[in-house]
Length: 263
Image 1 (cartoon, helix red, strand yellow):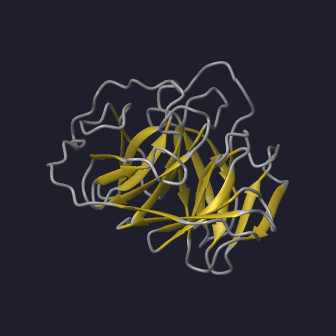
Image 2 (cartoon, helix red, strand yellow):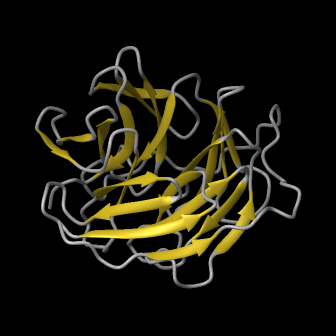
Image 3 (tube, one colour):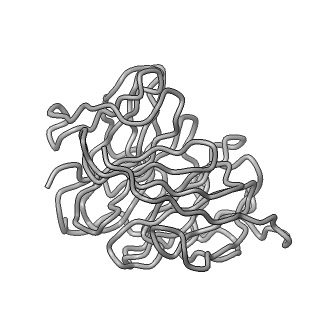
């Protein structure tokens, strides 16, 4: 694999009080999870953290891509890094990303360091058709505005420490925005802008590991919950109702968000 030059951006400490979502206050849903399909739906994927192997499912849930990338214990990420319509993978480790442009071996690898980042995140923050990176520290989100993270970053607070960061296009406007899953109450809190403020969408998702994808192919992202014991994804609508389930992977695998893994 070819190694490109790395880049680095620093994440500061939050100096404002988070105006994050408030448990028990459920806003009126402002999401759209139904509509005519615009493209094939996203399909699920998992990462074997022991052997550092990705398993990407096909449209029928059976055909798949299987390949090694990263190292044991890495946190997997996925995104369309170059805007070509194909979702490829990457890994996050110790505040740094390793991204590949090929779902397989032999692709170019880009290294990007976000010093101070505790948790990773990816999304199309700029609405340009390509995914960018973020680093999360507590409830402080730092979003890069270019893939190499060379330009000034966007920072804002959302949620509370201990939340699991999410990102998706909740309203179908072409821009991915922030969200969190709160393990303490099983709720999902979503916001339609990358700014400090209260959640505009809130629903109960239950226990599990949350991921995001456009499960209907209509340009609107929703959440799925992965149950480790059965290696099953429950694909939810924008109010938390289970629309369907997909069994994929093995117990102990780490789920990824949805993607289009092939051209």
